[in-house]
Amino acid sequence: MSSKVHFTDMRASHKLNLIDKVGKLFSEAGFKEMISPGDLVAVKLHFGEKGNTSFIRPQFIRKIVEEIKKLGGKPFLTDANTLYVGSRSNAVDHLKTAIENGFAYAVVDAPLVIADGLSGKDYIQIPVNLKHCKDVKIGSAVAMADVLVAVSHFKGHEATGFGGAIKNVGMGCGSRAGKQVMHSDMLPRIKEEKCKACSRCSQWCPTGAIAVGELKKAVLDPKICIGCGECTITCPHGAISVNWRNNMKDALQEKIAEYAYGVVKNKKAGYITFLNNITPDCDCFNFSDAPVVKDIGILASMDMVAIDQACADLVNKERGLPGSRLEGKEDAKDKFAALTPDIDWSRQLQYGEEIGLGSRKYELVEL
Image (cartoon, rainbow, N blue to C red; front, top):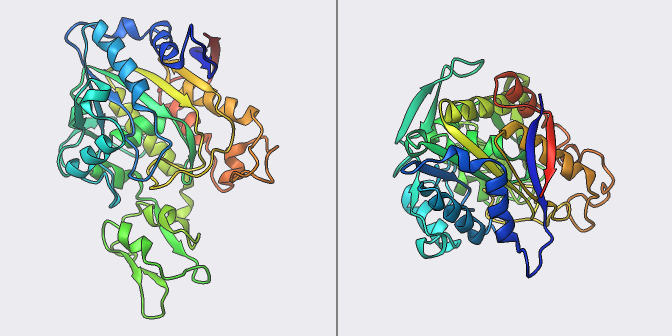
């Protein structure tokens, strides 16, 4: 059985601007039916790392907030703290970064609540009894909300091929301890010939597991490494790559799907995804590389698997942009495989369908 995925392109006019289109998608995708007066509505988004510029614009988020309030819902914007040491690893820095990136109350008309509290320890364990996890550690603000509206920025990802609704919900709502569980099958591998001893990796490591040694090369202590993978994405010289434990490349995607399952278990949820500024990397970076394909549109659905599948299909139909990381691979049929050739991004969709998150079959309904 196919799920409906509602879609609008990026065209706009004086009669219908993009913010208005978001309101129409909200209505036509069926979100009105899942929100009742008095419901606490968690609007899950990524506030953007300090220095990143590809996150979703606050003006779009305000429109979603307005639509929720029209129905009598009580919206709040939320995300969980990061595992790595960046500008969002605790609630104080996280809120400061969110406000600096434009998500102040005066702009979005809703309060900001960091889902797992001051230091990432405020979570609720939800039983799931799945392949990897018996229970999942979800930020309490999300776990206790009546409704979830997940607003995702679709882009590439160095460890999962792409990041969309499943990753936004699963990884994004997991507490810091939950994120560590999800990343536990990853270890960095240092390519000494590329290391420039810049120490960027050690600055971002949450456990002090990596540092520049006496030979002016990065050195890893595998005994205290928790596999968060942040050194791999922080290194500006490509000197650190992912070394999967026991050939467990699929485990990360499967665990993310299991966490997403726990988040939406017994909860009403809807998904809005932006297919613009489609960068090759996660918004957790403190920079945004050039988009790899043109802006495509905005999608909404009640099915997180279907909306991710639709986004992947739409991206793969486009031609890669010259001057981006896809230069020389513009005609690749699978853009994500071209960016991360050792990752099978489809596993998160396959496994999500297997555990009942949604369907990979969809009907694209154009606005």
